[in-house]
Length: 368
Ligand code: IPM
Ligand code: MG
Image (cartoon, rainbow, N blue to C red; front, side, top):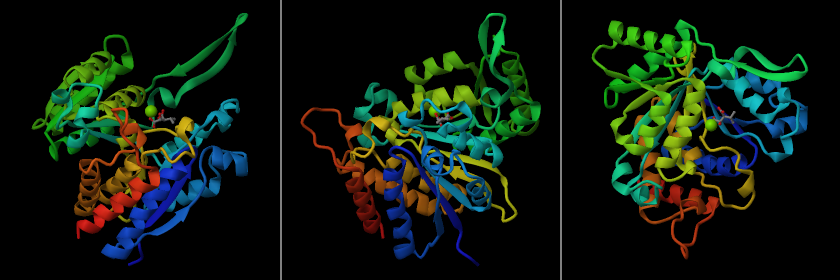
C-alpha cells in the first residue's frame, strides 16, 4: 500500500512559520514511528495571488481533491485588503471548503490544566473544559445567493443571503449526533429561530433527525445570542454545540478564548467519504494569519500541531498517535513553556515558535 498523502498549504502571515513546526512533527512520525506520509506543498491565499493572480490555482484545487488530507496554515493580510473581493485570500480558503464539500467543521475547545489560570475567565469556570463546536461550513450566509453590492435608487445596498436546505441541516445534525455519542452524548443546537425562518427550519430538522435516529442523545435548542452568553457564563454545561456557518464562526472564536488563547485551537473540516473510505478532509488552526506578529518568531504553533493530531485521528484512524501528540503538548505546557500569546505575568520570558516545536518533538521522544 502506498503512503497516505498530505497536501500542505502554509498560506500567509504566520501560516508558514507554524507549518514549519508541524513538518517537524510529521518527520518525527516517519523517523520514530514508521508512519510516513507523501507530503507535497503548495500555495494558497495571498501567496497564491502573488504568484498566479488568484488565491487558489486550479492545479492546487485538483491536488486538494486528490489528497488524503489537506493541512492549511492561514490566509490573508493587510497587503491584500484592497484587492477585488473575488481574488481576496479568503476566497481561496472558501473555495477549498466549498469544492471539497467539507460541510462539517469540528472545533474542539479544550482547556489544558496548565493554562486554566491563563483564561480571562475564572479558573473554576474553565478548568477541565472540553466542548466541541460543530459548525456547518459550506452553506448559509457565506455562500447564499443573491449576494453583492447593488445600486438601489441613488444609493447602494449590500446583500447576503442566509439559506439552508433541509438536507444541509440534516447532514450536519447527523455529524453532531454521531460525535456526541463518542463523547458526552449531549447536543445543543444554536440558531435564531425567533427572528429567522432559516432558524425555524434548522430547529425543526435537527429535532426530527434526533427523534427519528438519535433519541438516545440529549438534545437542547438555544438562541445563538443566549449561546454566546452561556459560553462565557457556564461553558461546561455544553458537550457538542451544532450551529450554522456564521454563528459557528463567531461562537468558535469565543470558545477558543475560553481556553486561554486563539493560538491553541485546532479544527477539522470533513466531507463525505472518498473511494478509499477516508473522509474528504482539511485541517487548519482556528487562528488567522496574525499579520501583527508575522515573521517575529512569536506565533504559537500548537493550534496547527493539534490540527495535525486531528488529521491522525479523523483521516488516518490513528487515535492513539493523535493522543500521543496531544499529551506531548500537555507536557510542554505543564513544564511551563509558553509562547508569547500564553504569557500572563510581566517578567515571564516567552519561547519562540521554533523552540515550542522543538520542545514538542522532545516530549514526543519521551513518550516512546
Ligand atoms: C475561520 C475564519 C474564516 C471564516 C475566514 C478566514 C474566511 O475566520 O475559519 O473561522 O470566516 O470562516
Ligand atoms: Mg473565524
